Image (cartoon, rainbow, N blue to C red; front, side, top):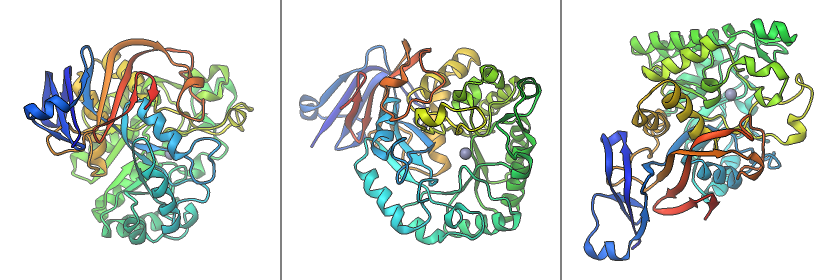
Length: 428
Ligand SMILES: [Zn+2]
């Protein structure tokens, strides 16, 4: 029997409405409400004085590039980046090479996930080859461990096929995660369409391309009763559409990334490709609307869209550089800075957005310190100021706009199933 005793920290567990100085106990990988005197004697004791003791963070949107693009990241290095950022549960996207659209590839991913530093759950493709033409075998994908279906990176353009997809997925109680983009409106687009794209002479990606697909998905969810989750919402009007849909009881959920709440398209003024992502950074009004959407629950959670790329790929002409940034190791600090520091959210609510609410979207067994739950913990210092050095991170890639920047708030110790996997800057 192994026991764990975390003492003296500020324990915040929104799921059990806990916020105060206290103890957290675990035996054999699960939380318990108390330890016997004998268990206390042999417990591993962690002094959390000055730290917040929260459930391990949950991210339902990461790209770990395995199989096929492991020069950017693999499941082990990605999971270490997660641990370093305080995350204990992550959901990886299937746009690998080959894509994850069959049982064999899922089994390969599951085998790698079994050796990862944190809990890694795979998703699988909605369509065969992620080509948006023919449905993948959803039932088989679920049987082999897929926790949701997505063609993330691409968006199914045919409304008819998307209708079949959500109805078929619903039969297996699987959520469809959608990257909302009408391709006919975004051909060759590299940034948000607006005043800044005009000034910079770059081809614009109008938010209407996201709004149209968000509306389409709301309509199909309303029509079929299927659960559709909108990934990385970037547009104010999409937030408004989702707000109304939720009010109407439509079964939709949505996420926002740390970069879309922290940055705007003004950051592209220097043509730095570390600010190039899809969907693109948008205007201040969009950023404010996303924050408001998180505040009133229109947007369910934070998802990083951790997207590793090698330096030679990112260091190219703006038009040709790939989209995306890494985010697992900076997500907590960036989110705290915007939502607590700037927008004055209460700290427990921000933790809720990064733990229980994220887990709930896909019904994952994570996001609480309650008795019986997996003993996954994130201990962080909400006030520590530090300079993020992407070259010293756990991810294989370094493509972060926060490299060299001062951040506030840092994961100190990460615990998965009662075992310390990250402590004081190093993987254990
Ligand atoms: Zn995407």
